[in-house]
Image 1 (cartoon, rainbow, N blue to C red):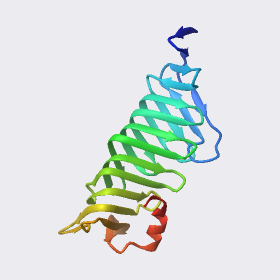
Image 2 (cartoon, rainbow, N blue to C red; image 1 turned 135 degrees about the vertical axis):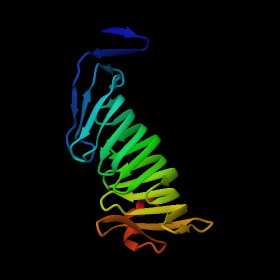
Image 3 (cartoon, rainbow, N blue to C red; image 1 turned 90 degrees about the vertical axis):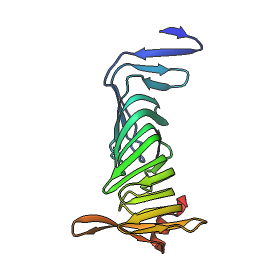
Image 4 (cartoon, rainbow, N blue to C red; image 1 turned 180 degrees about the vertical axis):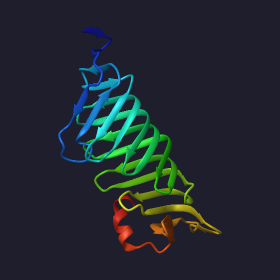
Length: 216
């Protein structure tokens, strides 16, 4: 061990190292596998994987490989250049952070989510694993179905979507736009003759509002 500036770093030249936390809530059963050396700052407890590695959570099904990973056991994981597989779909982003105590995954930078017939891009995403709700903000756009909105909520269990604020939704030959002051548009996932489609309605159901109430 040698002293470097104000911190004492311990370099563990071990590949395939694994961190497993006890399973109590989403993201509490994470396994982290290093693709190369690990660097542990013993003053903060933060471990850095400069060559990246993989992360798997057996409870939520979230898994990803990343080019660079930092984590504090039982507290957080940060990763860059990530493609994440999860209940919400396939997510790619410049950076991802998991807050274990809050069961929260956040992502930003060149963000793109693909799920069922949804292909969404936005400035940032928050995935609340306990409620299974994904919340998109910042220039949210979707190519299938075609819409844009200030904010978008996705129920990752049944695929239903709520557009919030100023929005525009196009299906076939018609387009629905929000009032000037903004509004809400419900997109209900349906399967018609084996094809997944979204049924749009400005009269949002009480059930959907209740489902998303904590984030409105």
